Amino acid sequence: MLIRFVPVLRESEVTDRRLHVDRRRFLALGAAAAAVATWPVGRAWAAPLGYAKGVVTLDEKLTPREAVTTYNNYYEFGTDKEDPARTAPGRLKVRPWSVAVEGECAKPGTVAYEDLIRPHRLEERIYRLRCVEAWSMVIPWVGVPLAEVLRRFEPTSKAKYVEFTSLADREQMPGLRIPVLDWPYTEGLRMDEAMHPLTLLAVGLYGEELEPQNGAPIRLVVPWKYGFKSIKSVVRIRFTESQPATAWNKANPREYGFYSNVNPAVDHPRWSQAKERRIGEFRRRDTLPFNGYADQVAGLYTGMDLKAQF
Image (cartoon, rainbow, N blue to C red; front, top):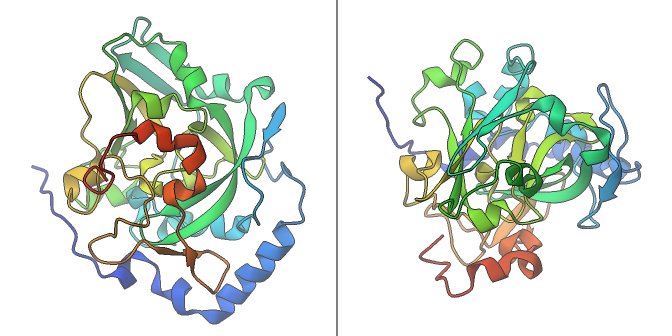
């Protein structure tokens, strides 16, 4: 029997205390950020990905790759921010990999990883990633627009939402032994959110294939929502007529709404969301509505009470 509980965490337990208070590490990350900002977009690392065009959606300093790949939320590999980088590499088997697509669609089937990394289909997009714990990063993602993938399966008029499911393998993922959430991890979007041009099915970052701790080999990136909506290691996509249950909303609906749009006017019950800490910087900055993408996505929520439907 799976016993579920809602974790009661202090802010210091959610945001890694060592990173928050260690001035020397902040100095190192800040210096790395300055260096990284001068690198060309798409610089290749160990396993480079090809892509035909670059789509730059903002002009900000990139977060150092070292921080992006060592400071992660991925509870399947541990609840500490540094756990995934220690435990996921060497454990998570990313080949072969395919995603089942089913539900309210005319042509259910699968999409393989190899189908997403053909060079003429990939784009690089520099997006902010804003986490509910009030920290943020700027990351050059590589992937394909989710809408392009979903259209292949011809969703029907009954498809109002899209549900995503992560891999849940106890042999590979030691964090699954701890019932922090009702595994497997699930997330969902309204159909218009899923089909929005900003929504990306990512296969890489910094011109390199995704590392295990970053959600390899296929993850979602929804840049105007809090980071937990950008589900990692996706194995299933399902079109649904009703709003799907999602992992954090099931665990604690008071703190994690279905929409989870970045909104400085809606505080987390245990801390303010009006300010954020950009990794690599000392000073907090103002949180931007919709994470800075209001011009592109605010129209999706016309007429909604974003404080009630958070």
